[in-house]
Amino acid sequence: MEKKFWRFFSSFWGVLYFIIAAISFFSETPYEYILGPLGTVYIASLGIFVGSKEFDRWHNKHSGKRRGEMFVVAFSLLMLAFFVSSFVTKGEYQITPDVTAVYIAVLSVFLIGQKSKELYGTRNKDQSHLL
Image (cartoon, rainbow, N blue to C red; front, side, top):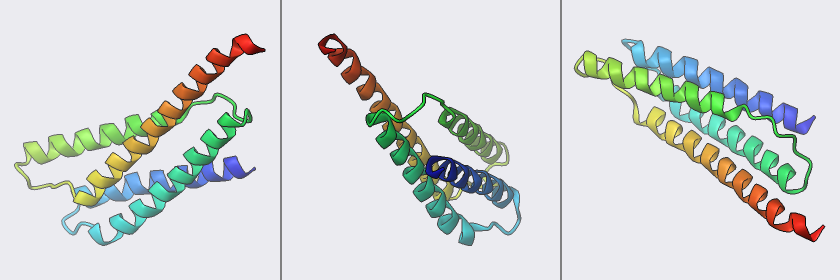
């Protein structure tokens, strides 16, 4: 139950963040005042979810389902759309530092999870001959 809760919780905040970031980017009155706190909640919930998932993996309680790539791809496409729009409009639309920071944090959490998974696989392969 706990892992499902954190998956839902981080997904909820992630989707909400994407929506508010897109609305803010294309709005005449950006919602920058909410992007920082919302991004902080999203990154915190994502970190808790990924951390608990990796903890479970290292204690042999994790199934190998992978959904994190979807959020990374979605966020990357969103950032690409922001960059292209900003370029085409010659800066009429601008990417806020908060959105860039949250994107970097999402990539970091994802890569740490990937590295943990890789190390776990290497460790198990190295120890399989001992069994």
